Amino acid sequence: MNRYIGKVTIGEIISWILLAVVLLFCLLPIAFMLVASFMDAKQIMSMPFDWVPKKSFFTTDTRTFFTNFIKAIRGNNNNNMFFRNLFNSLFVAITCSVTTILLASLCGYGLAKFRFKGRNFVFMSIMATMMIPFEAIMIPLYMVASNFKMMNTYYGLIVPFLVSAFGVFQMRQYLITFPTEYLDASRVDGLNEFPIYWKIVLPNCTPVIATLGILSFRNQWDNLLWPLLVSQREEMKTIPLYISKFSEEKQTDEGALMACALLASIPMFILFFTLSKYFLGGAGVFESRKG
Amino acid sequence: MNKKSGSYSIERKQARWGLLFTIPCLVFFAVFSFYPIFNALITSFTNKQALSRTSKWIGLDNYIYIFTKENGGFSFWNSLRATIEFTLGTFIPMVVIALILAVFLMQLRSPKGAKFLQLVYYTPAVLSSVVAATIWMILFDPRGLINQMSNLLLHTTGRDFGWLVDNTMLQISTMIVYFWKYIGYFVILFITGLAAIPPPIYEAATVDGSSRWHTFWRITLPLLKPTAVLVSIMAMLQCLKTFSTQYMFAQNGAARQPIDVITMNIYFTGVRYGRLGRASAMSIILFIIMLLLTYLQFTVSKTDDVEY
Image (cartoon, rainbow over all chains, first blue to last red; front, side, top):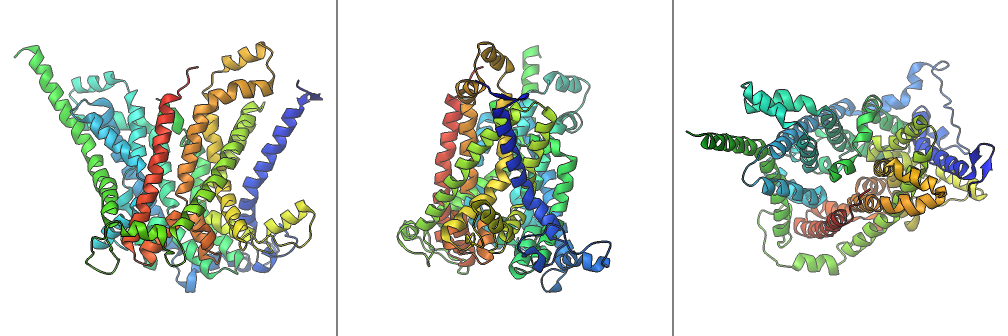
């Protein structure tokens, strides 16, 4: 059944080809963004496309080399909001991941290790919220935000994402296997319940904390819809809004657009290449669903 | 005091701590999930608008409106069509190809190579959807790279495929962007599922003289069925919520009509045009669709558990 060419089967060759094609498909657009951010619009739209930027760091002066990046940072009408908006994005994403970790672990610990009346009810209610997509409740949330003066504030951007039901679920599943003897031993040692959570439980959840933190960080980093509703003022916008506006106004300046996209992706790339293990682990929904 | 009542008070104390730990989240979800969906339901029965303070109870009028009227050229039926076409056109190729890639990756002889490829396939998911849409819009330009490559592959010269102009092509373009962004994520989901199948099963099959192809059809696929169904429903749920790609395309000059997915219609109706009642009715319909799918996911994951 298995035919061989040399030492490999035909099946293997076919699988290599397919894997390589998808590899190219995944990488080409990213490579394009990289090189195009050093090109002018004319070169980007040249036929056939020339992958080597004409401007070189060594032959032209550095300012021409970085023209696109300078434009990207200056932004629309030179309003110089790039760094402000970058800060907003980082601030919102970091705050949301910290609160998600804290609240989800607290709740997950309570659900996993304590017996109390109504525990199942609490757990089922929280799980039920997973069925409510954000897109279906954004209009009421938008009304609440405008009634409570949360438009154009960090509160407005952050509060709806303080914790996620999925986070609570993951924490609970993880902590159910946590040895209860540890907790009892600490109780015998005279530790109170909150210090037990803070000093014993939390430091022992690092893998979940990492996956959950990254998940929540990138969800906020990627969030376009909600900031679109609550951030109208330039200085309260986040990076997705900045790019969206920039691309509307610089449609014909593709180089600057790609430079902007590249700059906006750097934080995520850094995170990805340092913590890739937890990125890939974040997809392990099934391990937890089964448990 | 006997021992029994002592343990009883410890239990009471425990119960109090348990409740105390869970209450913050419970309050949060009550305020930011249950209340809003309830509020959306109520609002969908009123003629509430963004700028007026008062609103009137109008019963099912909003629902009748969105299902019978044009809604200013962007009808809800059109949104349903756009969403369903996008969902089917994205999740089926995504699940099938992700499954094939995952199987191939698992059979690679070098685990390091497999790990590297997983990482590369996942890289597009790291970019935000806005960035993804921006890159692809330039690639889809009439003079862009995609047209050049398509011409090369099809042996045509200078043909413009109208990626952002032609209605069908525009839909396909949004599917490609989404596919590109999430393929790696789904490959990893499948690899997690495949890794859960214990190796002895494969070994037994090999000893019994089963070919690879045979092993795949008769062993891997049936054992993977629950995972595949779950991944499919997850992918569908995700596709139903798509917004960023379509929004970016429409904002940058592509026609809104063919890619006017439900979430985009909710956004435009509710936020741009301030018709909060109508937008709420659309939200409730979206919620019901997703609820049905989630219910399906729940029943499937319950009944279809495999024992290895």
